[in-house]
Amino acid sequence: MIEYLGGFGLKRMRVFRTMQGWVGKGPQSLRADYELWLVPGANVTFVLRRHSVDSSDDTHTYVGHAYVHGLMSGELKEEFKGRQLEKIALV
Image 1 (cartoon, helix red, strand yellow):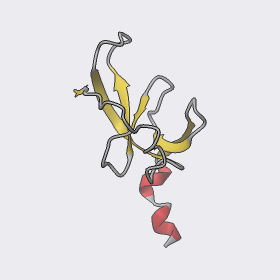
Image 2 (image 1 turned 60 degrees about the horizontal axis):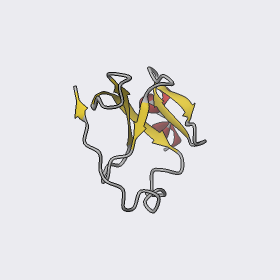
Image 3 (image 1 turned 90 degrees about the vertical axis):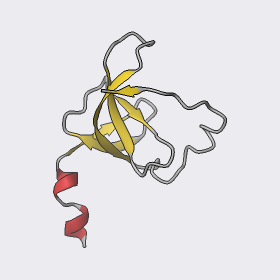
Image 4 (image 1 turned 120 degrees about the vertical axis):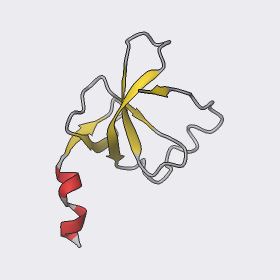
């Protein structure tokens, strides 16, 4: 059982810490300027790369998924309550 949990997928991930102090594992290609996105109904968080430094540009590229300790069971649900969903374009 332990072998399965630490199998191929997790061995190929990089440990990271967010600016808010959350610790997780994400893609090996993870960089400091990538963004971590929470998507309602998803079982994982998503790592996205913004195409432009212009904040009005809403195009992103999917980099991979991430496991963030303490965020995977809806712990931030109250913090995001009432916030508008943001639409972005994935290319």
